[in-house]
Image 1 (cartoon, rainbow, N blue to C red):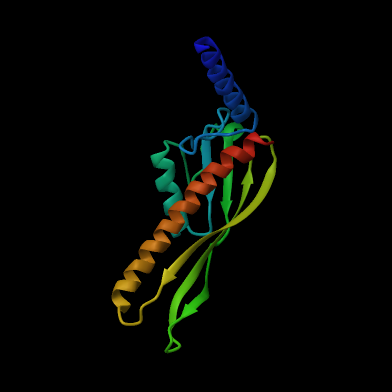
Image 2 (tube, rainbow, N blue to C red; image 1 turned 180 degrees about the vertical axis):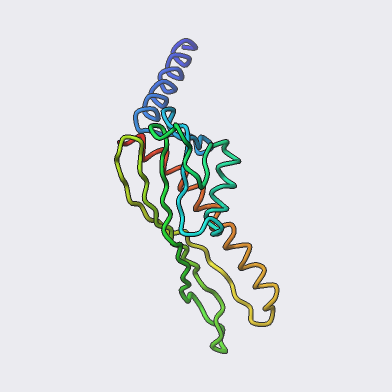
Length: 172
């Protein structure tokens, strides 16, 4: 009886491992570029744009080589990321009884084109959404909170770009 339990646990573990491996599952902490890529060249209309700075921050965290200049001699192993201007919109979610806005939904839009070393070009866009409560009596505090929320949204967008780069290249 005891041997049957051990065998069934082993079988369940093997089936689960096989299912996860076959569906393309990757741990979220694995944010690396494909092994045949040495450099991430980031092109943007402004290299001081907040999204570019957030992306450079994340590249440093994940130890990804890259930057705003092309790397000489690495053309065959460089992924080029062309960032389009970011967009920020807000949508009204709720109002106070007085008619003043109580809550917004912030919509941070990101569009970019990726040029892979094999010549494939891929256009991608996505949105990062956040709810933001607006209190007209606390204008200064809400202004600081808004800046913090926007910074977090940009970092999330940078993480998502890096994650998508890896998965999109694997799918080609």
